[in-house]
Image 1 (spheres, rainbow, N blue to C red):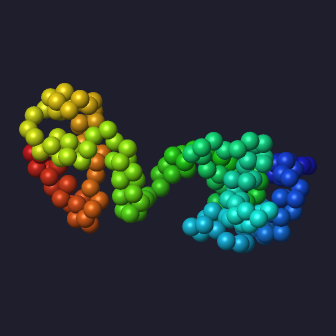
Image 2: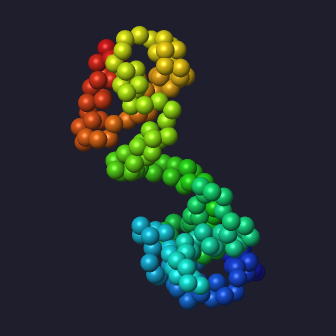
Image 3: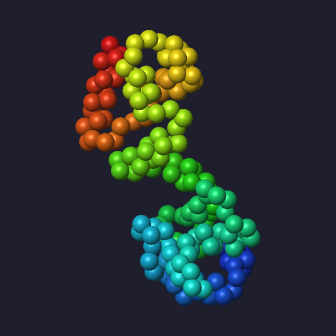
Length: 180
């Protein structure tokens, strides 16, 4: 019986497949475990034809015959974090890949800073929204933004402050005070 994973491997360029097989070790579960360097300990990388490549991405792009869309990543479907077996790889959106994963405070701060830099409103407007009295509807009309966005600002769901290790505690106490 032909293995489904071997069918996918046949879609790979023979030179790439030989290069790949020389750099893996097959484990008891049938995974091809990458033996060389891995970015962040889980993204197999290697030098192929003079370029450093993301091995999984190269596999998915060769198997599907087209490049992954912008914002998509190649991940393993098995439990082996260094698996590069062609049938175990899949391309998914970055948001889907990170669903349910916990981020460090530093990573959250970088994401927040990036989102705030793209925002149509400034930090001063956010501070004014949080400080001035009135309803969310009235604040939304004054500042020309959607009511739900004002509520998210007031509930600290957006425009979080990661500048101090105590900011989360301060924000939580302010939120409790405003709710009372």
